Length: 446
Ligand SMILES: Cc1cc2nc3c(=O)[nH]c(=O)nc-3n(C[C@H](O)[C@H](O)[C@H](O)COP(=O)(O)OP(=O)(O)OC[C@H]3O[C@@H](n4cnc5c(N)ncnc54)[C@H](O)[C@@H]3O)c2cc1C
Image 1 (cartoon, helix red, strand yellow):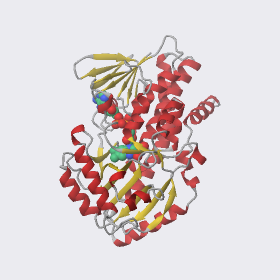
Image 2 (cartoon, protein in one colour):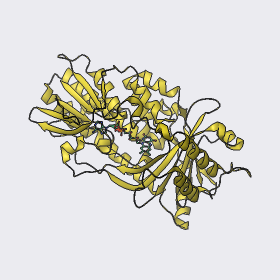
Image 3 (cartoon, protein in one colour):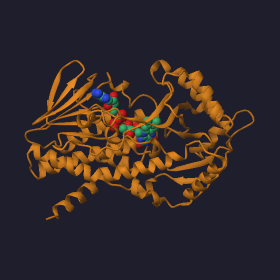
Image 4 (cartoon, helix red, strand yellow):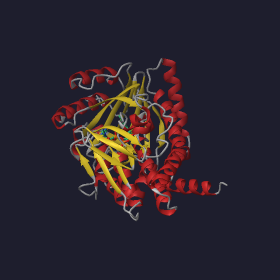
């Protein structure tokens, strides 16, 4: 069997590892090739800037691929198991549980996106990824799939996995142009600041409130430690706001700075000092750091948020074309689950293919058909629930009237009083056990 994966982001690299791990004993052997449009690992969308929260369920799934991946991350990330919630006057709304190691085996990891990517690039054979190989079309034929590249070359495969993100080309093989990525009405701006550049009061506060999310009348501002070092070296920060039309991603940093200050400079924090206010300082340091790194392609991230509309299916009926990660279900980032769900998808495909092709010994055609069916039945429901939660969370970042703000503060206050178990559905999910339960339930059917 020959498998081509389009995209070497979080989902593409994860499914590469899952397939290599679970199909290594296939005879004849299974070949797996990843094709990535970016020229090298250091230039992919996964490595350009940005901080990420990787949830316990994502880390668990990653550990199934290789414990060395989670060890790499845990050695570098900050464990942000508790989040401090404030309003824009600096009032404490509460602290909520965001995934502790004690309960889930892994704590929520706050990390630069490139650390996750580096972990997945570990132990990767040199020829596993064709860098600079942009796919322009995927065509399913009767007994296989053709992958067309920008340079005109065509490669054939038994299975093509579209891990090519929210603007997926592979998705077009299933639905044409019927399900384009859509702007969800919010934009995120973010980056990193060196902790040493921050005022002492703010630096000292990081031992009490290492992850803070503040909600105001016109958006949201969050900041968090981005490494496990002592003292911390970098903070990640991000501002999210409602904007009717997606902003121009080439807006100069000076303009962004003015806009951010207009939105957040009046916000207060208990860690403000007469010399330096927290939000003003973070915006100034963040924009300075962005300007300093702009030539390296790592300036500020300005990200109009695009999502994938709900798809009727994630696979072609034959199972020869499958989508995973953002190609199938790019969700509002408010879920904090996009990367984790992409990794869960990858593990699921690897385990089902192993089951049907190696354990049940179905031929390639039947293995792919069964894998696709099982993958969709197990994953679409779970991801759908997470997307609904993300949409509800996103509402808190909309422009609010005075009384809407009061209601929001009250809801947050209640949420912070709830026990950690409210996160179990998301964080305690064990993808391998779900696959086994599914297989048992299917074999019990007449
Ligand atoms: C602002 C923001 C904040 C986020 N925060 C979080 C968070 O805190 N926690 C979390 O879990 N998730 C978060 N997410 C979501 C998360 O980043 C995504 O869900 C995750 O990156 C999906 O991985 P993927 O591999 O499916 O897609 P991607 O990471 O987009 O990777 C797709 C890859 O495919 C390649 N590609 C695309 N087209 C082609 C082509 N035609 N040919 C060849 N290669 C191609 C791309 O270059 C890229 O490398 C956030 C997203 C955004 C926008």
